[in-house]
Length: 79
Image (cartoon, rainbow, N blue to C red; front, side, top):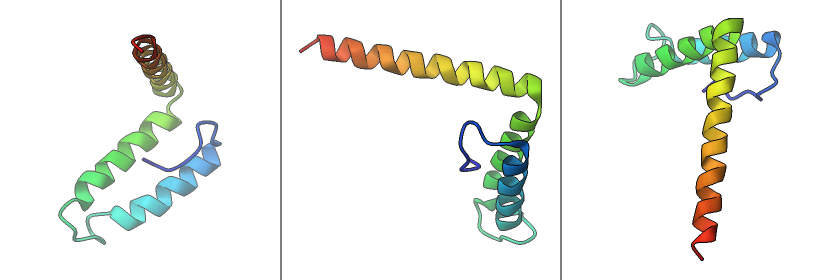
């Protein structure tokens, strides 16, 4: 959502957040979906800057990757 790398620094996260927050802030952007996008951006920022939430997020991401790899492996075995 913030278009940053997985190993982005706190400063890179803040910069990306500020750019997107300005772009999608409901007071600045009257698009119907802007508020929803703004909330997603804010939630992502909150997760990435909170060490406990970030650790949980990273763990969930790793689980998703493993499941995806397993599905691909099972699919390849069906040939």
